[in-house]
Image 1 (spheres, rainbow, N blue to C red):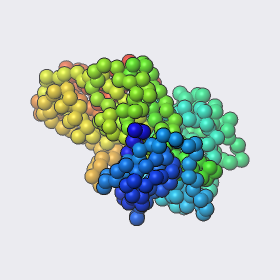
Image 2: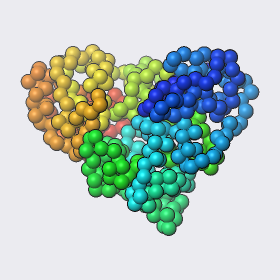
Image 3: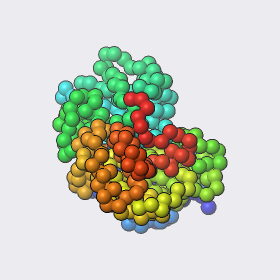
Image 4: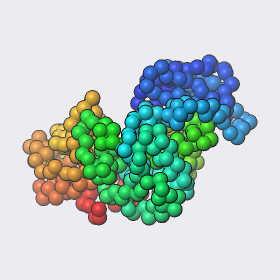
Amino acid sequence: MGTVYRLLLKQHIGGAGIPVVAKGDEVGCGQVIAEVAGMGANLHASVSGKVKDITDQYIEIEESSTQQKGFHPLSGEGSVGDIVKAAGLVGMGGAGFPTHVKLATKLEGGAIIGNAAECEPLLAHNIKQIEEHPDMIYRGIKYAMQATGATRGILAIKGKHGAAIKAFKKASNSADKIEVFLLRDQYPMGEERAIIRDALGTLLGIDQLPSAAGAVVLNVETLSRITEAVEEHRPVISKHVTVVGKLKSGTSSQVFFDVPIGTPIRTLIERAGGIDGNYGEIIQGGPFTGKRATPDDVITKTTGGVIVTMEFPREKRPLGLLVCACGGNEARLREIAASMEAVVVGVERCKQAQEIKGALKCEDPGNCPGQAEKILELRKKGAQAILISNCSDCTNTVMCVAPKLHIPVYHCTDHVMRTVGHALIRRLQSV
Ligand code: SF4
């Protein structure tokens, strides 16, 4: 039996896909298998094979033994926005907003910002892609400028990525007005509003869109997929993914380009060397915002990382939770606390984390408003240890307060960072 690929009908912002194939159909790689009625994105077969199963959640395709190279091309007709829509492209940095909707923004005089922050620790596929294929990203910015009428392009990247910056500059032409902007090396400088604040000097409200600052922000993989759609008529059938953690092959980050959408996580981990003994959890995404997954979960259009962690430490003292808008949410911290066998006695939220449409948004991402009163509040509720998900700057503040009160601190990324021997998210070393 060939590998079975499970393509989720809902894997990003917008409506769920409606299948346009039937069980038993033979499909070719790149063929449309589900469409959306309203806002959303088409879904294409990521391999050639037979439709094995269809539910209200997914379409499964069993790969044929004679996998042919290539894919069913898009027609390539229409505007950049039309082609991108036909390709089923969504933001591949994690948020998954349909890209054709962003490209419909009118930005006369505005800017396309390429988000190359790769803010989540350990993930490496975006920077590697810039180093190896800067031209694809560069041309993606140009196509996005063409679609929106933007007159300026910016690649926002951390200064520590010297090789990627050099490669991108080499691919640049000064006549195109595409420049490089250097971001601070802190989490969450890749947050859309943080990038706009730092690159354009406009701090948007939590309910404002980037267009209010005359900008559209697109992740670097999304930009390269725009280029693929326009130039190669290639639909979105694969994803770049970083695999890292407690693996038999070692703990360094491994980048896999063009993993077919729907690939089981188990298969990808095996390709990366396999899990090394007992483990704590598998995370789909990055250490700050990723979600717990199982080996049977699958790669989607927004999956950036697969992380295998060490086992969790045990904590018997009453635990307080301090929740950030840009890191793990309360449910995620409670999940980690349960894995630590800890009893949660109180929950506080950073005062800049405001709820909007059921999710938390930070008023000024990455600039700490002070955390002392939150720590004292948790202590008042009986916490003798705390688990936090704060940004770099706020974690720094917590570490200036909690140890003096003899309150040990866990960060939601600690078990990930310890797995690979990476410095913990604690006091800022450099900015
Ligand atoms: S200021 Fe608060 S809500 Fe904003 S990123 Fe930092 S910890 Fe999160």
